[in-house]
Structure formats: structure tokens, C-alpha cells
Image (cartoon, rainbow, N blue to C red):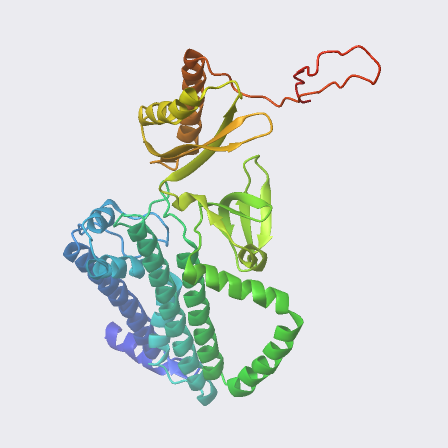
Length: 408
């Protein structure tokens, strides 16, 4: 009897044109829908992790973070091709699920079971679209981020997602491609949501086009730098971390933006260069050197005999061939200078390391000094010969006198 009275009370008592019984059914449906959605996402997340080599102890609805579980690190270590990374990327994509959007979806499911005013029916449908669109956009943004990270690590020879302690190596192309994809995706989602809410996006897009032309004319330099950044991303003349030089600017690339590139000079200061200016002249990328060609010269005095002059290139060759990571190219007596017999030597370092090159050149110079001293040959320095002529009527003096003057 008590239960029957309670049921009658729930059926007869109304609130906002719906009985308490209908409110109860709607609330129960919302709670059930939330539970089912959470369970389904967790189940799919665990299945994807298991199929990709992980374990089932993964929280599907953990907050979005760059850190990944050990299971996903293991699965990415085993991923040798992009195709084998699909499942772990999908599993990590589900981490972008937002609880508040699940709650909103569950509430909208409950509201569909209630009798709502006509104007609220349309608003509920619009909220459905906004909720689904936002969640899909969050999943898409997360997937783009993961694919970009996977691409960068794959380019570096690794096959896993980065952790907070070991971030992915940033590349220009990956950064710009990721930014462009996410910008395009959010723009499409925003236009779709605005259209669903009743805005006239046709006129909006047309106005954006007209405004874009005006902005383009007023910001030609900025757009030039923007297209230069796209050129850097596609052509890849350098990447972050490369040592480059162009004109009077030289340094290590720290960041490539949409308008400027930031370099760190050898003396420590940061140099900001426009992308257009950086690509205007020829650019040297020292990071991509595999060998280093060295050319240096020296001179010996005119007291050197013909035999000694012919032996010097052979001595230089023996010295260079005794050095590690050095490939001898040539050594020749090239010209008669004002005060020296000039020699030019060329060799190739089999490493691009500047420190190794400097150590090698120092060893060659010291060995060359010692070898020439043993031969009795002296290095030349700038000299000048002064000829003294006697005056008419004076007793003849020595016709010539040689005086060596060290150049200042």
C-alpha cells in the first residue's frame, strides 16, 4: 500500500511539466549512460593497449599529459613502422576524453526523456552537436600531437612516444605541420559549431576573405616571413640544433617561428633573424658537414736550396699521413713571394668536429717546425733589401748592402 501511494505520488506530482517519475527515469538514464560511456572507453583503451603489447592496468580517462605509461613506451619501442603505431596512438588519443563532456552527454540523454518546451528541444539538439564536436576535436588534436611526436622520434631513429624527462627532438617541419593541422581542424570545428547554432557562416567566410585581402596587402612583410617559414619546413635547409651562418649572422638554431628564427651565437647572445632575411643569401649549414677540407700556406726563406725546396712537400705529406682522421690531398711549392718561397698544403679531415681539426692543425704545425729545423730550413718573414749607390765624386763604397727589416 505504501509503495502504491509512493508511485502515485511520483506520477501525480509534476515539476516543469514533468512528473517526478519522469525526472527519476531521466536521472537514472543519465547515470547509466555516463557509466556505460566510461566503461566502454576504458574497455576500448585497455584492448588497444593489450593489442599493442601493453597491459590492462591503464586509466583510460587520466588527464592529458605528455608522459606515457611503461606499457606504451614498450609498445612504441617495438613499433618499427608507422602502421604498427596506430593502436597505441589510438589508445593515447582516448586520454583526451573530458569528464565534463561525458557528463554533458549523459545529461542530454536524460533530457531527451523529458517533455521539454519546443524552443528547448532545438537547444538540446544544438548542445548535442557542440558536445560531440568538441570531444571529436579534442581527440583529433591529441592524435595530431601524438603523430607529430612519433614522426619526430622516428626521424631521430627512435620508435616510441617521448616522456617528460626525454622530450621529442623538435624539427621545423614537424612543428609547422602540427600547428597547421591543428589550426585547420579547430577552424573547421568552430565553423561547424557556429553553423549549428544558427550563425550565417557564408557571410562570415566571405567577410573573412575580403578582410584577408586587406590584411595581406597591409602585412606583406609578415606574410613573406610566413611563407619563408613554410619554405624552411618543406625544403629543410636546417633544423633546430643546426649550426648555420649567412652573411654576418652565425649561430646555432634554437627556434623557428612563423616570422623569425632565433639563433644562439658562439659568444652566447641570442640573435633574432627574420625568416626572409635568413633565406635571402646563401646559407652554410655546418651541422651537415661529414668532412672538413683544410687549406693552409707557409713560406721559407730564399736561402733554401733547390734540393730542400723539393723535399719540403714530401716532408709535409709524411707529417699529415701520420695524423689520425686525416686524408692527405696535396702540398706544392706554388710561387715566389716578395720575401719567401710559398707553399700551399691541402688535406681533408674525416670528421667535422672543429675541436679535432684544431688539435690536428696544431700537431701538424709543431711537427712542421721541428722537421724544417732538422733540414736547416727557416720560415720566412717579411724582409726588404736596401741598395746604397755612391754619390758622384765620392770614394766608392760597397755597392750593395742587405738589411732585413721585420715588418711591423
